[in-house]
Amino acid sequence: MKIVSFRRLIELTKKNFFILLRDKQSLISIMTLPIVIVIILGFVIAGLSGGTSAVRVKMGIHIPENLSSKYGNVIERAAKSSGIKPVLLNSPDQVKKMIVDGEMQVGVSASASEVTFYYDQSFGQYNNYLMILQSFMADEINERLSGIPRFVGIEPIKVETGTSLTVISFIVPGVVAVAIIMVGVYGMAITLSTHKESEVIKRFIVTPVKGSEYVISIAANRYWPSLISTFLTLNVSGWVFSTSYDVKWIPFITIITTGLILAFGIGTILSLAFKDLWTTMSFTTVILITMMLFSNVYYPFSIMPEYMRIISHLFPITYFAAGFRYSLGIEGMFLSRFITINLIFALCGFLLLFIGGKLLFRFERK
Image (cartoon, rainbow, N blue to C red; front, top):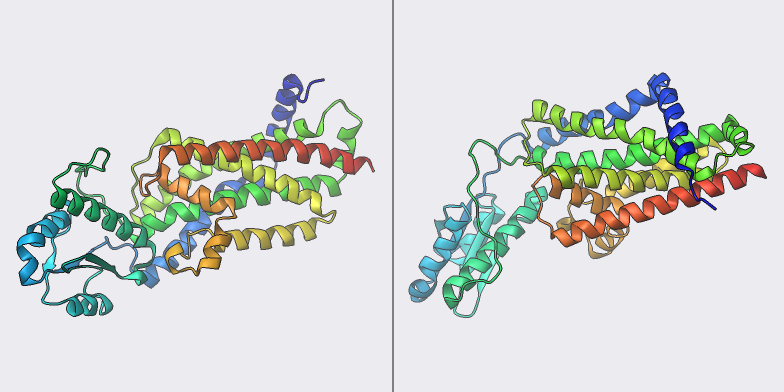
């Protein structure tokens, strides 16, 4: 017994395609919602933080005179290798004071037994960058002190000048990722709830069409406008906020596709939870807002208490946002982790679509 008839699925997808084209309100909503969200939040964040200005990271270092022969050139060269010209300071207290006063974002202080790295945690969304900088400098210092080259390491690569990191360029991918998931979950849940209320599904029950075929055909026709919307949103943000990215196209298309599959699956399950359209809308909105707040987009992990970090890692939107930033070249991630995230998204998404479609028809028969 076939789980899905591909011939029926293709025919049903074609019919739903023309239905979506006639439903201009839904089509416009899918394609413009991420753009509207990014523009609104973009201006708010830019106004609060001066986010359209390029990042300027200043580093202060302190090396005691008795250790200057051991650490001096090592730390200075490590800093310069990271692209930052450090400022020499007189004491560790001066390093801390200048960071607290906002004159420096990064500080390094050496003693006989350790090298301490300071950074300004209120630097918000740049904390990931500062931690990457810390890791890079630690590797450089270890290599120069030990004289043993790294077997596996990160090599800095010079890129064409003119592209600068801003608050907006760092936050926009996270906002777009949140908007994509919101459109996928919300659109699928509302569409299926509307079909239930208008008894469209009851008409399909008496046909050979299976629930999984019906649900997948709807999801397929919400995929392409969401993909187009993503391209449009990134282009609009580039025009309005002067953002630019080094897009890795295969990971970019992959993470959007698997993320939408999972979002459609979650939306399908949410549509089963309630019979009433407005109850579904209200509950879905609460779920999406909760996921959004814990997504490491608006509130970075670095300022979250431990219990909030644990909660945030339970939501798929956290991993989707990280994978999306990786595909745009602004966040590091092991390729194996990226592949694992996408496999889990795709498998769970398809499973939810199959189960949700089957249960949808079964519940409507009662």
